[in-house]
Amino acid sequence: MTSKITTIGFDADDTLWANERFFQLTQNRFAELLSDFAEKEHLEDRLLEAERRNLGHYGFGVKGFVLSMIETAIEVTGETVPASVISELMDAGREMLAHPIELLPHAAEAVAYAAQSHTVLLVTKGDLLDQERKLAQSGLGDLFDGVEIVSDKTTAVYHRIFSQHGECVSRGLMVGNSMKSDVLPMVHAGGWGVYVPHGQVWALEAAEPPTHAPRYHALESLHQFPQLIQSLTEN
Image (cartoon, rainbow, N blue to C red; front, top):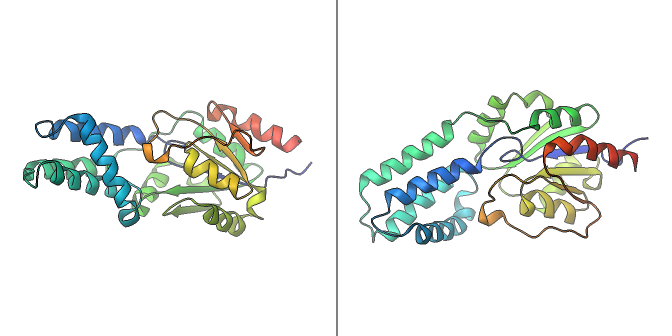
């Protein structure tokens, strides 16, 4: 029987390889550097506000994160932040951009399994150069039929991607760890959305699951992915 699903998209950060924990480690370093000026919780709140404000200007990724940290540092210190702190924040950003890729458990197996019978896409947000670097280091590049590095993941974006690379979004499935970016807009577009949780979720990516949507599925890990595809193919 031919599957109703012909095209499968995978998110990258925290779905196929580790990402958020490096942001958290850098944010902890940020709090230590500014501990003489503000409490950690206050700094985290101010940084999140800056990130939210700056998304439309800088987009997602390390560079926007570093600029938001610098902006927050200037604000909480009343424009007296030492140049040495700014320098350390920039160093932290460069370290994040150079960090080796760490594939998550079952990621390679899941992509390879999907590639046996489906058109497989990488659909990710973030800085173009950084995401291209991660993909090149991942060893998974040859498994993808298409790569889309987008400024945001919306219903319209999914319609375009799955129409361009596949038959249509209604015959597409998107896998990712972000309910807000990977699952909800895909389900709203008429496709399948598969949620695979991983560690701590960035506050700006949190959302409630569409538990009553027939095309929504949640897995404990990518280890269950082949079984899910088999069940959807058989139905």
